[in-house]
Image 1 (cartoon, rainbow, N blue to C red):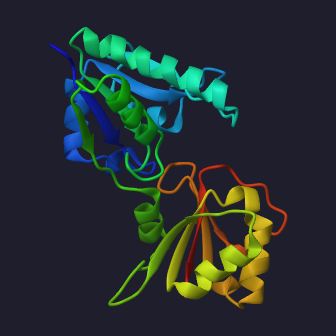
Image 2 (image 1 turned 45 degrees about the vertical axis):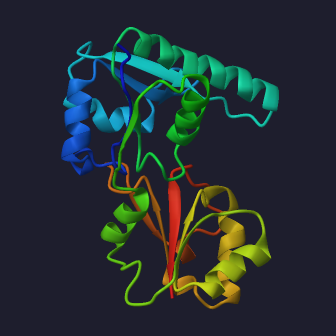
Length: 233
């Protein structure tokens, strides 16, 4: 009998923001799969759930996801990763794949799920939603994301001045994820629109490493990858 692949959202950073259902699935699943960094250090999702387990209590399956745009390398590495999970499922073991935030919102699990469905369609897959960093940021910043007929956009920040400007102009609230790499461009856009005072930036929201910034503090800053910006007009 095949095991079930679970996509578990474990929240934005605070271990207490994991749902009761995700916690139960973590406890019930003999194998926990998690994105592993190339150098072997714990991933962000792994650290979120660390407080709930004793060492060696679970079979931990670290999966390396290559940071490259080379199609051949990506296909090979992803195939290897899916087969590693498939081996455990073939043994009848449930595998809980943990991801920060929600499994179906800009998550590594999306690609894992698609490839597993293509290569091993017989595998049962269940997804347990999680609290995203977007919800966590709204809570920590005290900013309502939407009210009444407000329009809200969730946008990966990119090096495209006019598109970033237009998305702010067209919406009442915009959450820019992956903002660290283009923070200087985003600050220029906000200054042109006179909205610098309406923007907040947060890194590793709700975790014990959380940092909250005012946008006007960030000229020339080097920010960590897990950083987002909320612009609420």
